[in-house]
Image (cartoon, rainbow over the protein chains, first blue to last red):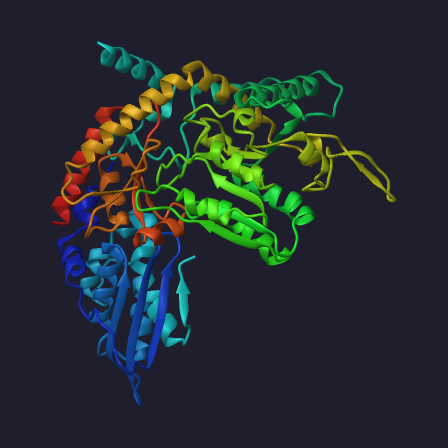
Length: 153
Length: 411
């Protein structure tokens, strides 16, 4: 059986976020930042966060860089999911996203998973593209862990 | 009329490559990733199968029947490679794992022993990483200096710059014959002559050349030449280093072990003569035998036909791709192989790769292990269709259609 990947992978949400990404900018005075590279394709992202202490709330998050539609849309969606979350909450979403891209989570069935993640629920059909979607999340995690550079390899 | 004859030929040739007849996403495969690896004609794995089923045994060892047969088949390929490259002697043909290992062999064995602090190694801006990194490692260890010949926006080496960079300090020129990411065919013969006049040796990376045009090492007068079997319609895991005997003779071994010695005591080991000095351990016997079958096959098709067919595909493809709005070809050398690297502004190559894959078309997207080339053109990656003589103009039309669909998804 074949799948129609265009409808599955390049849904309108992805095309739109690629065209007009959210939070595509620098954050002057960011408390955390990191560079993420995918050496296989040359993609790179820069993730900025501003974390409010005490309390550890991400009050601003943004990104810049070059990449494919999947990596850009994923970064854009990630920033909208994380803004206003606590660091603990960010960890939970990071884990959920990792499960999702392995095909282990189903946003349609699980009410605890953000609905906006559903556009990536079929990406495990495309092993070569999984890293495109996950680069931003690993870079974000690297920024919070004070790792300056993150690579997918 | 001639077009009809050509099509019939291609139809017949395609029957030799079962892999061309698979479907991807329910569509007949279009395989345009020949610069990464070529498909193998049936005769190649039949030869390997014959070895595994009828005379699988080690080479250069046993006196039993099967070992003698395996050794004869293995050595027969060496003779075929010698004729294929027009080398003077079969002992100048060393079997390696591929182009990368062949280049590393020269860097390690020749470079470490004959190059010294301040010596210059000249490469070009369009080299594959495998012809950059071994020299960087050598430079780091020995204090040699790496110099790089730039290319222009058409993707042609700037010859005046080459002449300027080539000095008495240049000890080695290591140059790609045909660029995998641009398709540029470099004037290696002329460059070799110029390098020799300055006293430098020359290594030619012929990975992308041997499957597409006749390569004659005596005519080129190169000192070393490297290629991989799997880009010559042969198996993976086997490649060749050609070297002039007088150079190979004075070079120390690359790897130590069995097969590369003439005698071993704990006090002293005497190395074997060429070519075995450079072939330590049990080689890829089946793959070498498969490579022999691949060479026979390519010669039976003939380079005249191969070149004519690929040049007409290149011309057709260059024109046809212009139908895609905004598409820009990267690499427009006057002397060019059938490689079509391109960008579509606003669409990342990986998205192109995934979308054309939906249409059953295999192209390569990424930096093609030539990051300096990408940097030159200010792009992170390109999409690349690399063609071979078994491809057709109808397949190019399908690529164009698929790219027009990409434009619909990313207007």
